[in-house]
Image (cartoon, rainbow, N blue to C red; front, side, top):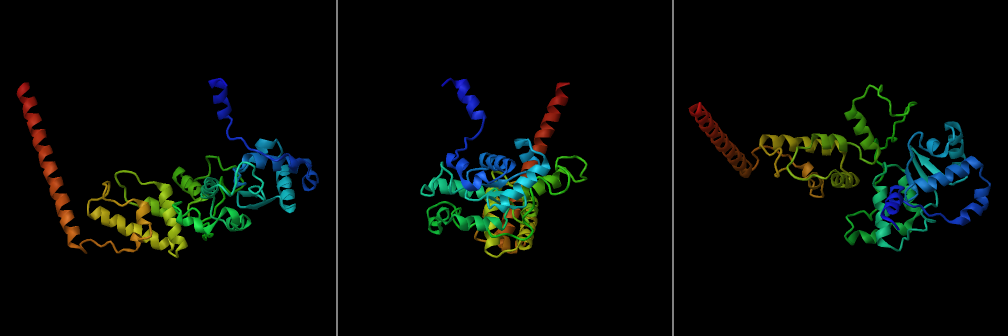
Length: 314
């Protein structure tokens, strides 16, 4: 196949398989034409797990149906037990069970499914989803080095679930909402799976040199919530740590912990982080200040030498 053709095929996106027997099933042929069209569109557009966020206006654009007809089709599919909905999330019931391209016997496929679910809001429907596919969620696999993704899905967290793409009467894309872009971005991040309080914790977290992966921090933070910690407790710990780092001149250095470690099982957020509790803190602070004073002195000396040299050259 020519390179141009392969590139064009790749640009079309992922291929979605479907069993032909679906089209002759009695429960399918009893659906109205609109419901069939919406069902097939969901099958083609939802990821392999058969569950995902459907933004306002997306189905209308993809099917060519009006908003009223699309809503009626979705209601029909839900009454006929083809789909379930919560917030902006649509679950194609039995979609994963009849997914020809994936098998629960393949560990990589199971891991792929669980990673996809991490991108969804923490809603009650995810618990039902997990119960519907027990073969995809074997608890014993959590010991095989899959970073806890094979464990139970996060339980719903109060206040963590918000519809994606906005929940008002508008389209969610206008500029007259009165909210700043920062607030809009935070609302969108919360909608795609960030647990309650994480945005505040992330905003308050001290800047560090080097990497500080947000997704790894989310996973560690979510794990602590499942262990019983509260968002207020963690955010308060972040603020204490930020003040500590500021007072000890650690902000912007590699001495700031990675957030995933701070939110990890050692529960660093629960520490008091008081200045001077340990002599090592005082020693480190004194050393840092000494080094900075020496650097400032060298810089001043260099600037004086350059000024004298430039003055002598005139």
